[in-house]
Picture: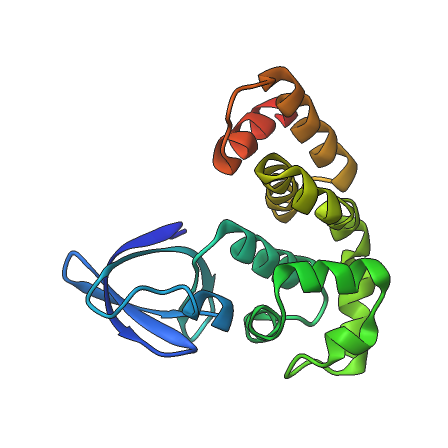
Length: 200
């Protein structure tokens, strides 16, 4: 599995980029949410990636943030009938916050506005992800008022959910680590790493 690419941005289109890493050009499909945060062509860029292997192709999907990749993985791994194309469409059509709000509130209309998603697919996404996104999304209002720490906790829980852990155990592990750390400033990656140790 290719976890990330770090190299020169050779070409950038709204749906795909080419990154040169030590003389090899990687074609990576990206959502619009990532395209909006890319540097200028010729600059160095780091993209988190997800590799999809098919009989006829190896496809790389890239994301500027871990939260985008986590949501992409949640969609393709936990929602029946949703593949990479639809998952990219979701990330391109709405922010992560809007997506989580739509899932928690059962807002089929908002979800169905995304290009490529009909009413039935929107209903399936909401039904199959409600128990996975619910707790994390419920933290969102608190995240905006209580600052970065709460946002890191939310992102860490989503990362653990994308790895297959249950919502309740992921939330409990993250809260335990934050309580133990007290005033220590832990980034999201470290939070996930410690949570994985705790859950192992």
